[in-house]
Length: 325
Image (cartoon, rainbow, N blue to C red; front, top):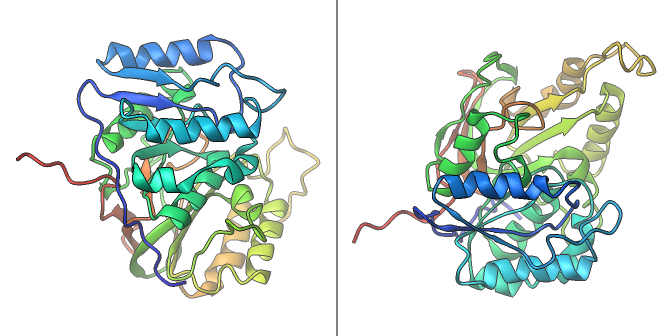
């Protein structure tokens, strides 16, 4: 399938609008994980509607897959909810997929945000419904000290219809590197690399033909990254990509605290070895990942990757145009 791009868009978050919060992956740990973030949104004039199963916990997942799937369906079907922001990632979203009614999502398109394990949902929602989604912070990140106003403002602005334009660089380290030169305009898809791999051989295997592949990772040493990208190549997943955007590879290079990791090939060595020969432009190190700063970008929309200028420009905001009539 070639050049799959989003064809459905939710409405922008209005002033005073409502954020619906399901937990399709991991659960809360302390009640303040939810209450702090609820207050953050409310202090800015927005309403928050928690899914009925938000307080469920089953070890490392937020309740049964049936309940988590039903909550996601409800958030899209609920007329009071303007946008949907997942609690956070972790693990468990894959087992929710069979319990999602994609007809409900397609009939009630809404802006949907999350990252990491939520990659399972980004891929499935785009391929099943044509709906654009947002790779951005989970609800549980809003207002916490480990993140920054850079991340919070980017998420709010994306929900409000301002996710288009150049993706900003990391304010602490603005260096961005081109792994391979060139320019291309195409739909941008992807998310967490480990999660993308675990969708292989399922009904929701990611389709990358004619697309810019975006991926990020956390705490994955270079030898494991090399192994994953080798699997992508062997599975033919890199054959049809027209560009690559490697976001933040947080804690993925060799470090003293991981002496068991061989200090041979570096992270950049692996990216050069695996992605350089593809013959498409590849950009590395925009703030898209698990680190301190996270820029929100829409997935499934058209983007322009200019590796020579070391820029990624999002050409569509990921939500429907604002009407002033």
